[in-house]
Length: 446
Image (cartoon, rainbow, N blue to C red; front, top):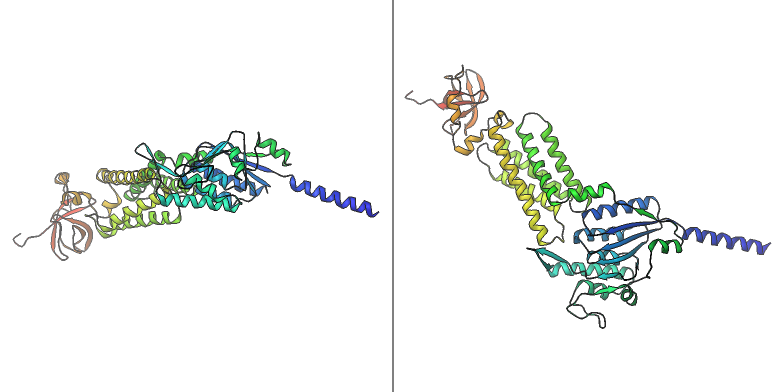
């Protein structure tokens, strides 16, 4: 009886152990350059693996490297993974790919695979240059921290990044360390060499793995964060808001502008570049420009407007450039933001001169007075005379040149011909252009 009970307990233990060994393994594949879409792909893969209570997350790597900002964000995701992680180097995991490999708990290789050569570089004027020492130091430290976390030799990880580090018998000073699968095994950077990750998983008792596929949203993120798409989103978004501010009511231009800016920040939020700070800059800039147009001055673009444009530019720039962006990325981002701002402002001025009726004109703000220094243009000379022409009144406010006048107890918006008249000055209407009354000071001799 006792022997039967003991055998039963042993069988239960073995069954429990077998059940623990069996489980879902999720394979996330990075094949090609590591980019902004890689981050969203890993985010969704990790989230779905967590929901499925996966027992293992396999990162299949065949990559020559990619964007450092994206690799740093991907490393963070791997370190916070909801299940044990395993890197399978299937051919090459160089540069940014090496950072992801050493950030996994275990590393397997297919025969003939290589890992390393991870010093950060940037391209400028069609030349590849090493990043500044500050960037190299930060990346070297991340490699070292990942290696130490999983009990690997820290100097090997650092030698992949910093050419000043030498390892006797493996790499001399002045060269970067790149390891074959056999070299990695000798230095403690390999947990084995396998022909197929699927066969290894089956042998380990994981059964049929779940291969997480790239989806349309990852491709959409890649498109929305490309330079051409970013330039279009910024330009159309700002132009839509400008047109909406000019046109009475709220309509399609405003919706298009909000949608474009929403897509821009949504995509850059997902890839870990944008933050609430970026949105705060943008909203602050829009408020400053609005105050400049509608409250502070009607004829000169002053300090509030300039500050507003700078804040808007900072909002877009901080959402596009990460802490490890290269010089080429920085120059490109500045060019895109500056081009979008300039085009939008110029287009807004052109629209203001062409539209027959706008919020600004309804409010008494006349763009032509800001450009030419005159309160009416040549076309006003041909304006049809109405009952308003010749009416006499007084300036109810200072006219700079826009203000209000009182004519027989009727108050209306006016624009003075002289450019400035003090409150209380006698005035006479010389032109009636429906949405504005052009007035002139009544001289004593008149």
